[in-house]
Image (cartoon, rainbow, N blue to C red; front, side, top):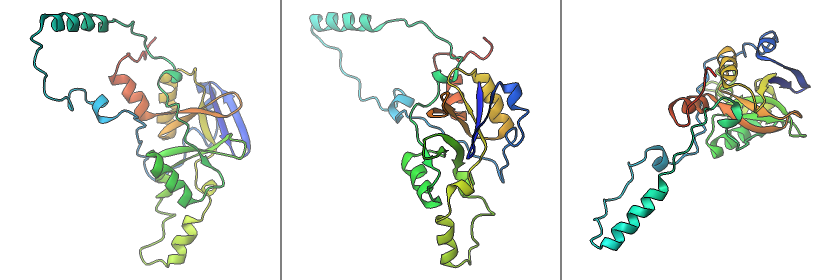
Length: 226
């Protein structure tokens, strides 16, 4: 299930097929392609197992130690049932990073940089979704002053409201939505990801292109055809 939110509130709620009929959402206007930034929270050691392993420990000479280690190893060999991923809730990022609609361009830059993300949903005073802001939006050529511009021009840009440059209306997705449908919307709109919201439009997470790609190449398997 998909919804569309803007500064005016919820504009639409329906299926993927119905979403495609909504004007202004089926292809979000962009001046250049968006670079999707992953929301990978893993550290280097977990992402590349073995790369940071220390020197191998010599085998214990004591027979009792070897027996105890073997018994411990057996307890770790628990075969978990593989559960294919089919819904957004299984792979979305649950860390909610949002930008207030009253924030300035400078404040938005600081939020994105401090959180290490390339995009974030924009919310109103009631914490309801109203738009989506990305680094690409902040670097649009038609917004950036020229190299010879006065410092006051740059100051005016940094003081501009994010509400003036964010993508809106913006589609959102429910946690139980089929992953294939989300991938289709990302292709149709050119967005780097979709906010995940509840029935009231409150953020519960974010699902990005990187989240979907990561699910394709890691366990448990991504069920694209179930």
